[in-house]
Structure formats: C-alpha cells, structure tokens
Length: 152
Image 1 (cartoon, one colour):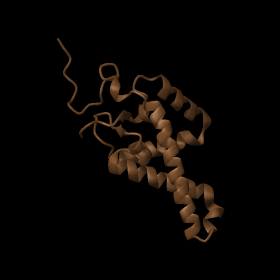
Image 2 (cartoon, helix red, strand yellow; image 1 turned 180 degrees about the horizontal axis):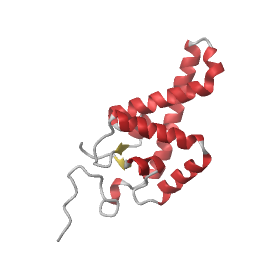
Image 3 (cartoon, one colour; image 1 turned 90 degrees about the vertical axis):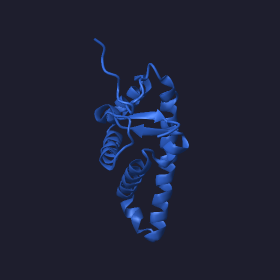
C-alpha cells in the first residue's frame, strides 16, 4: 500500500527538491538586514514628522513600525521587501501564501524570539541545520522560507 501523493500546492520536499531551500539561510540574513534598514528609515521619517517627539518613544516606535511593516508586507505578498529583493518568500504548510492571520502570528513569533536570546539562538541554529532552513516560528506555524517559485 502506498501513501497518497502530497497536495499539488504542498511545500516542496527538501530532499527531493533542494533547490527551493538552497542558500535560504544566507538570503534570510540579507533580507533581515534590508528590512532592518527600511524600518529604521521609516522610524526616522516618523521622528521628523513628529518634530522629534517620537525620539522619546523610540523603542516602542521601532517595535510598532517593525510589526506593521512585517505584517503588512507578509500579508500582501508572503514576503517583506527585503525577502522580495532576495527572491525568497514564506509559504504556509500547504504551500499557499501567508494569510493575514499567519503573517501576524509569524511576526509575533519573530518579535518574541528577538526579545530573548535563547529563542533567537535556537531559531538561528534551526535555520542552519534543518533541511528546510526553518526557524523556530516556522517550526511552530508549519511555514517555510523558499526560493521564489517561478509561478504561483
């Protein structure tokens, strides 16, 4: 008896289709750097628009801008602008693009792991050692970062 074939839009198998995961950890790092610079630019703009008052709330401003940026871009195209530049995107366990709820949950998981050293270290180690380069939030939500598909 053989097992049923995976759904057409399921995540690619990292062993059978390694090209979808090739170089993803490095691309994730570069995308994170691009996104961090963009968030910083948005915060500087907010500081100018608030005539510097936002400076007194800078940590909260950075957190809020980062959350809004990541949720909005992940909800819209399953990739932040940094990810799009690096030609990678997040996909759900069934291979589909992120919906707004999954984008929000992934962003909250990312933010929580960034707030504490141990979860962030675990997440990075997972990305470097897992066949599908999944971080901690990816493992929990069943998402995966892939090299962008040609279509879909």
